Length: 297
Ligand SMILES: *[C@@H]1O[C@H](CO)[C@@H](O)[C@H](O)[C@H]1NC(C)=O
Ligand SMILES: *[C@@H]1O[C@H](CO)[C@@H](O)[C@H](O)[C@H]1NC(C)=O
Ligand SMILES: *[C@@H]1O[C@H](CO)[C@@H](O)[C@H](O)[C@H]1NC(C)=O
Image 1 (cartoon, rainbow, N blue to C red):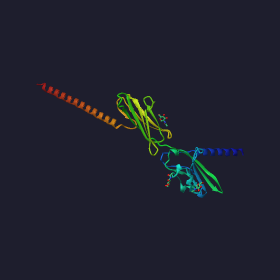
Image 2 (spheres, rainbow, N blue to C red):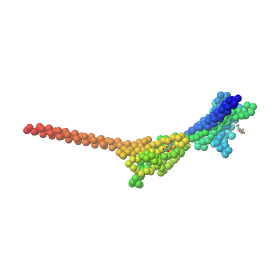
Image 3 (cartoon, helix red, strand yellow):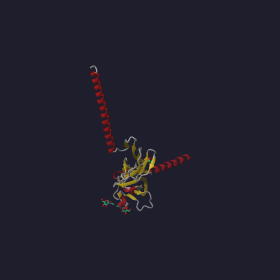
Image 4 (tube, rainbow, N blue to C red):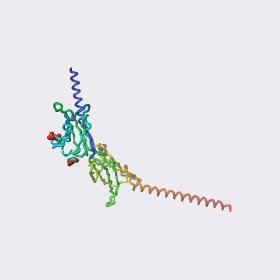
């Protein structure tokens, strides 16, 4: 008897944990995309007439002026209950409702949709009761593109030391953190300018500038961090003492053009030097032959 009580309690605890786990389904979507908020109660057939399905905003319920995302009553969408910000943006999967799939399509997601949603499924047989509930957390995120690092650019109004680097990255969400690191001693450098623009689809492009003193050994790296996705993309620049410079993520065509030019000049010089040596040697050989030839006379 005690044992049974114990295992029953254990089962309840297990169900509780399971519920807590399933209650926290998280989905991440790009702004502007369509998402499916999942709510599935499988293994049964339902007659639509007996069902009510409510999708509601589940966080800040008390302060929310309107919380109905979608309502299905007696097999019909009830639009008069729906909050205005969700009008024409939601749809249940009609052909799957009878199989217990109450998932909701939400179109063209935007920042204000970053909420916790709850589906409540009620069935009326003699009396109405809740047969299923589920919660989904929706966050928006998009990866930033591999940054493009330009520079060093000499500042024209400044004859001396200072150079500028520009780090650019596109199509990410939300706003990123930008880090500049001096790789010669791994110190953080602070940006001198930051510009962010939002595209019609909600994603951002960022442009960060860094001004530093030019040195013979510069190693600069810029990081674009997306906190939601826990992602960092980076690009780096390295100047070598030989003046042969390169950047990590992208090549400056002007620089590599200069390199090719220098290589061509060097090979022409070497070739000419070789020819000069050869000609001198041939001449000396010839004159020594002449000498040896004339010697007997
Ligand atoms: C929607 O729900 C409201 C309130 O429950 C009700 O008055 C109205 O008749 C319903 N409309 C439809 C089309 O079912
Ligand atoms: C929803 O769509 C209907 C018909 O296409 C349109 O009349 C209505 O203005 C739209 N509502 C919103 C809020 O976009
Ligand atoms: C991204 O890189 C910066 C600089 O190295 C670091 O401080 C940060 O923790 C990194 N973030 C992630 C998510 O790796």
